[in-house]
Image 1 (cartoon, rainbow, N blue to C red):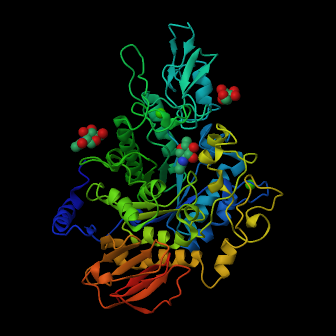
Image 2 (cartoon, helix red, strand yellow; image 1 turned 90 degrees about the horizontal axis):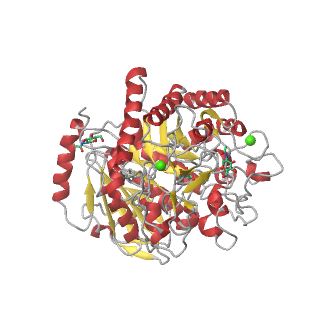
Image 3 (cartoon, rainbow, N blue to C red; image 1 turned 90 degrees about the vertical axis):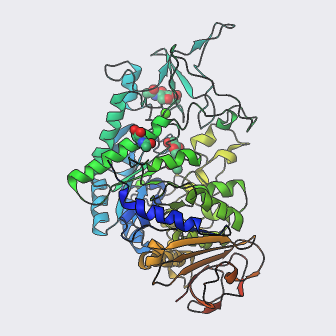
Length: 592
Ligand SMILES: *[C@@H]1O[C@H](CO)[C@@H](O)[C@H](O)[C@H]1NC(C)=O
Ligand SMILES: *[C@@H]1O[C@H](CO)[C@@H](O)[C@H](O)[C@H]1NC(C)=O
Ligand SMILES: CC(=O)N[C@H]1CO[C@H](CO)[C@@H](O)[C@@H]1O
Ligand SMILES: [Ca+2]
Ligand SMILES: [Ca+2]
């Protein structure tokens, strides 16, 4: 399979272009003009439990989503990816699946899902499902059969006898491996007289990918939902898919101390050399891509996409794209704008660092992407500061490639405050009242804010599964739609701009940290107007000379879109040699 030749020539050209440039800023060349739908798409993540409740039980559901598809259409997004909607005991809120082929009753029925797809098709919106390959729920039939060693299911999971401690004579887990959610990654099952591996919660046993039956079964899952009309999958939690092979005695190696924390229950206490980022994981993603491509070849239609969740280092993550002869994921999610700013403050230099980290490592001919948040992280407006949310939304729409929005980022929704009593996230529940805030993911999962009314218009019921965030009276769809200016209007203008302006889809990209606080991006395409993004991430007013960034810029630029607090007027002409920026001000400008 030679799938690369089309881009090889442009890739070579872009290398030449790069070599010809100075060090101050960086150009990335775009590939030829016609792009597949996902390459410039706006993906929108829906967390179904918290999006819209149609029946008043306080829990979001499929009919709720269907009733709000017009909102997504109005936002202008290309595709929505849904966190898991499959049958689940909800220990990890759907990431513990007990039946990969059925819908969680709280969320609706298969017919409800079909109605959702039908409506989405009518609106020309694509629906992408979450694929959770690493584990099932321990309440799944597969696991129950495996516990009983039923024929065909004996090795569906990673089972082990453990080892006998020479001093105490007692049985112990096979290794010191730790789960993500605190504590040992091994659980003893009395009935089977063996331990099973669970890299996540006790109720999420790891499937055994060294068993070809498991590999085939999970491909059936993909084909099953493709038959229901989905546009692709977002693959959950790839790093822990494979573990290292045991030695000839069947023993696994212990991980060593990492030195990162003193807390012996925290996953970071040990290295993850043997339990994450194994080469077999890369190959499995290539196999899933083949399933999707084969499906399209047989049944036609648009490309079915594979998006990948991985927080691995660049050397591993970039392999998911594919190699010289095989295609991998269309888009391995780029979390750098999240992770770099978790470790260091929001500044022009750190934004540049996050962008460099992706674009300098991405294989030639592949498509970049930019993610601001998800249901595992504090909300973007809380992390970056509400005054910077427009600047960040602008950034992910101005940079080349696809972008991903987590529900509520378009409104600048912030985290809810969830007490220890109200805490439901298993990660936090496995800790205690003193430290749960370090682990809890509940604050980013509070109900979506539709109106300033009861339950923010999310539910007509007496309570909601998580309390609402405190700011819903002002931060909600109805208020922001009615306001003359709002984060929502800015977001929509950005999506519209990305869709209508070829320069943003196909143009060259150049960017620079102009000062400590001011970050600037230019997209250009021959024969078309250039688009310039400039943002002041600092807390002081500054004046910059954009000519220092790019001497070819004209003396003035036209203002297209401005952050909420900016006092300028759209259409104004701004001098490039002396541009004054308020703290937190971000602008999208055009050379036209
Ligand atoms: C799943 O795990 C939980 C927690 O260990 C346990 O209480 C429950 O009985 C298990 N269910 C099955 C079917 O093994
Ligand atoms: C690409 O990946 C495939 C599948 O993992 C592997 O067989 C092949 O050797 C790889 N090719 C290169 C050039 O790395
Ligand atoms: C962002 C995301 O999808 N996070 C999920 C990763 O996988 C674990 C286990 O399935 C979930 O707990 C996270 O919510
Ligand atoms: Ca409901
Ligand atoms: Ca695994």
